Image 1 (cartoon, rainbow, N blue to C red):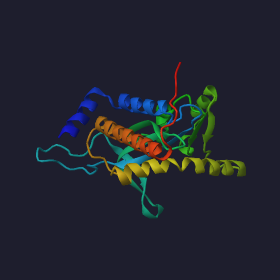
Image 2: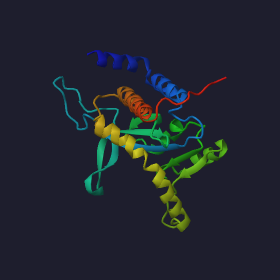
Image 3: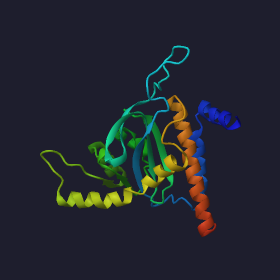
Image 4: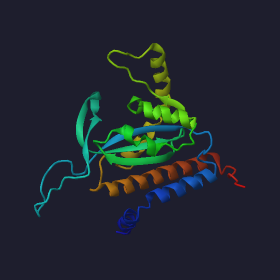
Length: 233
């Protein structure tokens, strides 16, 4: 229908990031999204491919999504299982607004997405230990961004008591990103992809990020009224 054709046009012209940036810009202008002094909470979640099992269609071609990849997913009871799918990575503010997002095959390590998720203007970057590389920590130092990445221990170098305490404090802030994923999966039905091919997923989850921020912005307005807009000289 009309929505499907509109979505396809966005895919063809690679426009989701342009639309996403414009929506966020308007929210910033209304002082709903805080552009100054904001933090960036980076996290990823696995999404199962709509066609995750091998099999052939009527024409004999493989129906499995060739752009997907295997990754781990935590199920009920805390048990992990492998799924064929994608990883959706986001950078969100402390208020839960999405300000950066990527979609990658499940086999791609989450840490490879950190550069795309960083704004460069955030005051601090919060992330779990999967993002704890020396390169990332050095980059944060160069940019003057506070390093709030959780540390990880090793067999011959366990975490110190201070590192454990630091990780706990960071986890309290990081937990806010889970609400964004809960909206995606429980409200938008995005626990599983709906299409095949990476470009379509990037657009579809990008539109979902736009909807998420727009709905949060509307709730903000209904609760607090219209704030003073940001004036640029």
